Length: 520
Image (cartoon, rainbow, N blue to C red; front, side):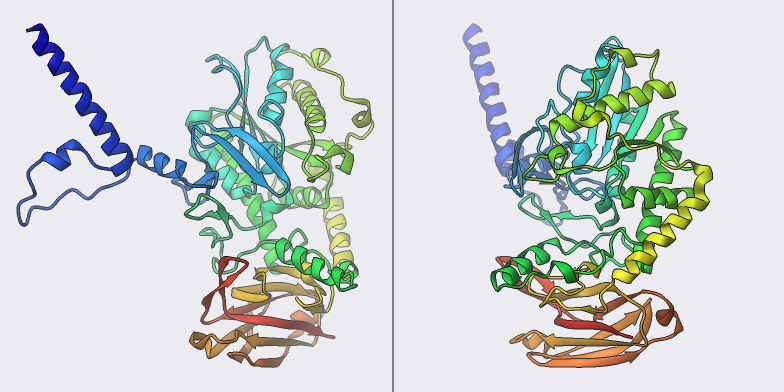
């Protein structure tokens, strides 16, 4: 009997091992291999990957990202992993948790701990910093003494998330995170469209399912400007004086204004949801930028704005990583001290532990931003916004030329690395009486031998251009009184497109933009 028991146990162990190997590597099972074949007409249950299957598949990819369930979140990091993350000149070693976020260092928090969420994108994430140097980790360390260890701070942030990505993730996981306080760090690229994730687990520029114009990727053309600037400077031409006013972040056109309104609605909805669970919200402006001021004006247009905590008046190069414009560990430590002191002063934390907080380094002490305008200063905020945009409108270039980079900052998006436009292209230009558009067909693309490109000004259709493969074409379109009175949006809509390969990557493309001009 003893031998029989040992044999049975060994057999069971072998079967469990085989079952594990089949499940892990072949998405199958012993039962599936050894069971009787399905009889004719019998319907097999379709295979549906579980969360575990998806985590295993994501772990095998080269990139650090995975696809979450909520399409408005767009992407998170791989779950429960040790990752090497490289972007630009920065390489980081990361540990992630079960939600695909940067893991909170240390043991699990006490059940009665006060819970603080640091929400946002790369600044909140601690880009370029170690796990112990993030804003959440530093804040928890500084508050641990005054709160007798009854505090837990969580990083709910991923590099290049926009406002909707960050807030949607937080709202999806309120039951797990259970925040008492949310510190949201808005940044200017919150105004841009979401990214996606490709098959290799890498971030990709993709259509944003939440956008009103999903075929137009609204995103600054940073890569194109970088590559073309390098080429022009090597040829002895510096384009920096003719780049124009930055469209994304201004309020010059309808698309720009809609972006601010959308972020404000996202924040207002999040604040409402947090209020339902009695959690407090503060917006943390890490520097007093035009974007933060403009967002404050937009939020006050809709009603009482959330509490705002101002940090630095200006983020200087010595406050950053040096090789990258994100805040350094020393700067983040100062941020944490200022935030902790502010939370005690507001009565959001029990007691008053300000005396126990570490002093702010001398180089930061005198550079704290003055308190932001209060809600009753809406009139002065509106006046500032109007004056700013009048200044930006005067800085607009009348012509947009990808070749010379004239006016290139005025592009909302839709420009590929080879100066071709994707399915849609949009930009803002100064007021004018007519619009001139010059384009060229993609050479050797028989599928686009003849292509119609619709031209819009402030969403009004002006007409269309007929573009032929390998040939240039030009159109002059009369503008109306609205476009003669103020800066206006131009949108080019290709009615067909194809796929091209540029620098080893595939891109959707329709035609090449040569020039766009608002004729005075």
